[in-house]
Length: 426
Image (cartoon, rainbow, N blue to C red):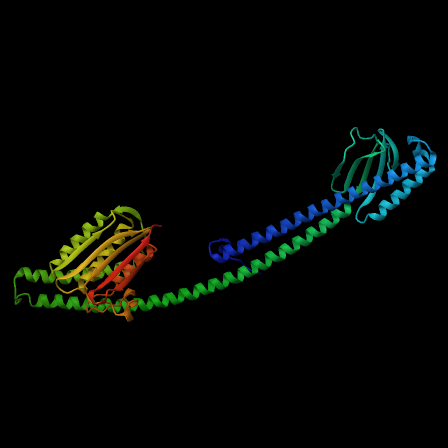
């Protein structure tokens, strides 16, 4: 027995929405066909009734003219008692029945001056309608129609009843056919959907396995890189501790060297933690001054080790995004630029907005990025430096992707390069 997962009916993926659209289209098509066929049958029945009433009116006009010409007197209600009238009526009934296929004549009555003139198959004498008007009434199995006919200034009321149960049977057969077609189409669509859904699940499972293998390989690279960098820093600390008594220099210089090694270990640890941490944005509007204040503090700290010039071009007062993650991205770009420039180099920071696009540009006067590695520099653990994990630019890329933006790099010849962040308000 076929087992269908409940998740199949959670229409979130494109294939599920397409399936739902097809089901809605087929349902609409079948319902429209059923309604159209019903209207078509009603129109056919009404046309048949109108044609029958017109035929009766034409025959009645000819017959009345015949009687007046034959007897040389004006029309009298007593003409209905003539044998010729009875014969004419039966001939008319035969003619009507010959022209009918799905219909069956139940009764016929012709009234003159509110009195029955000629009637056929009436079980009881019926009172003529108080007001004779052209109308057709349709029930499930029967049609009742009447027509006001004027002949030579005289008014006749023609009343006709037909058995239309044949149309009902035809409609029921058509209804069952459409329902059968609908069920077959729905089953076929659900089968295709189930097959596609299972194929999609298998593809996702394959992708999950490949992703797990990639993550496992990446974990191996991470562990190797961490072990290598951590070993170097710990070796430096160990050597400092071994040579503490014979250290050439002031105690303050020794402490600074010791703190520097510890700071390197803490920075690497933070990079690794941010690398594995999922980025959950809390976007808001915030003033750019808040961001620049912390960037200037970082710049002042970096300038104590290697002097450089920092120029800021601020063209907006407000940004939209996650302040924490945007600050991390800008800090990483600033550190990256700082490491690339020589002593006394130049770093330019520009924050602007073009239409609905927020842009942050970081220029440094360091060497350009070789074209062959322009894309690789944003991959994890890719670095051309002797120290570091190569996670800084990768983290910036993740932050931009979380903002549905991007990071690009543009070489300015031998004069340096620009890292550009761009994103839109969601």
